[in-house]
Structures are given as structure tokens and as C-alpha cells.
Length: 110
Image (cartoon, rainbow, N blue to C red):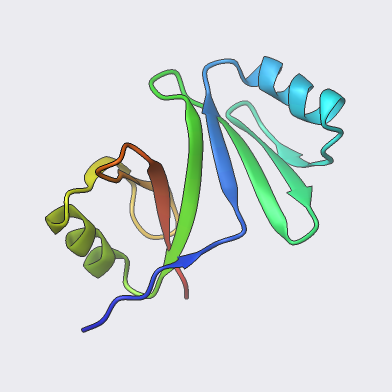
């Protein structure tokens, strides 16, 4: 079976200081806030979403790849040197780190 990975238009930034990040992205970059709660701020820019997520354990960008079979993609990536960082299952955060240190989320299309 051949797996297909498609880069989504969404990206996230993990930060320990959500208030500071919100001020920067909304006031300095003038990104429009789409939704927000105590754990994340979502900015909408044309056809993509930019998530700023409170995380006291990790910081930095998180790319997102879309797959047709979440578990098959995870197994394939782990066999090829990726590490699971956070795995909550379909429709939730599924973060992996590639052998180069880049963190990305897998998202299963429905």
C-alpha cells in the first residue's frame, strides 16, 4: 500500500506564553483572530488557519500533513525514524518529530 502525505495550509506555533504570542500576531502582524480560548488562539488568513497553542513543554512551529489512514501513516513514519511527541487520535493532535527534529501533526481526512 502506498501512503500519500499532503501538506495542509494549516500551521501551529506552540508557546509557553499565549498572551504574548496573541499580542504579537494580532497587534504586530495584524492577523485577524478567528476563535480563541484559554489554550489557543486561531487566526484565519485567506485559505489557511494559524494556530497559536499554549504548551509549557514544547515551543516552536508545527507543520501539518493530511493522510488517508492515520494509523498506517503513523506506523510507517515510526518505522522510518520518527518519534511520537503527542498522540490523541483521529480529529485531535497527533504530533511526530522527524529524524531532523521537525515537529508536524498528522490529520486524517474524512
